[in-house]
Image (cartoon, rainbow, N blue to C red):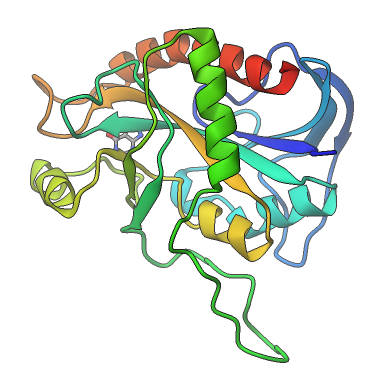
Length: 245
Ligand code: HPA
């Protein structure tokens, strides 16, 4: 049976409706995860839930201990990961409120610990990352989005920036030329660590603002918060649909 781990991002530090059975602190070889992992029942299914930025939200994207988070979820029996994140929209169809299931990622981060394969190793391993997201999990998300009747994009290239600052307009133009549709700060190294741990991983992104230079004025936290409030209600419906199906 698939035990899903849900990693909640900005706007989803807790999963309303999760019947919590236990909160587990997991010590890992990489230090402490962002928060206790919650084991519980959601939409009738056993799930693990982890707040990526801590509970309450306090860890910025570049300081999240991604290695500890993924390792802890694997250790507790996760067999697939659904990651939720808020993003900026770059290409025209990526308007605020849009739900997106990315199929590719470009990594613009630097200095993040991004592999479990280092130190004293028997052999050097290079994981295949041609297709960073697990297609079966992506299709489950897509089916759930269809069943909910929400408009969504089933393909997008996610560009992951370092943060915590937002991008310049020129950086966004460059990312658009590179082929990015959306921009966020937490996709990497989370996605590749799941691959290293052989955990099928897919991500559901919510567009919460036009990326730098794409909107009318500066990006404000107020506009992001407003989009998160509406959007995360839809995200929860999609998760319920996926798990309950
Ligand atoms: N850029 C990077 N990350 C983000 C954005 C953005 O505009 N919005 C939400 N997360």
